[in-house]
Amino acid sequence: MTRILIADDDDIVRYALRKTLEREGHTVFEARDGTDALDVLAKQSIKIALIDMIMPNKEGVESTIEIRSKYPSVKIIAMSGGGRTHNFDLLKYAQKYGANAALRKPFTDEELLESLNV
Image 1 (spheres, rainbow, N blue to C red):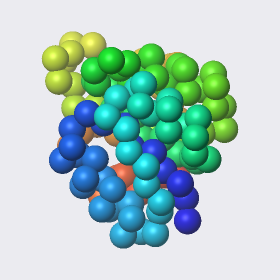
Image 2 (cartoon, rainbow, N blue to C red):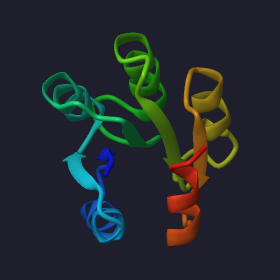
Image 3 (cartoon, rainbow, N blue to C red):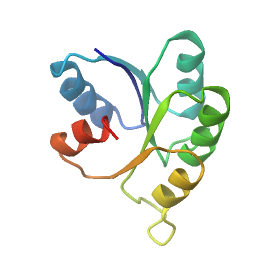
């Protein structure tokens, strides 16, 4: 079906998202941070990128801006649980700078799958 990139520094989150998406027939690629995500995008034809907002090396908003600039046809879904930045809504900024949709962690499998259609 769809080729999807998951960029998240949490191994458990990536595993859970991968299982849900593969169960629905999608092909999934993984990255641990924004730098790795851009490497995957340079090598693979990705339709949707799920991007965590709080990651090491290259965080989510910066990654979103760069993905939108280099790969304008890629649909970007921002993800965040807030982490260290409860008073700073990273999902709002991600959407301002190019994310097509946003998911606030924790989210359900149904919310994840619904976001693919936005």
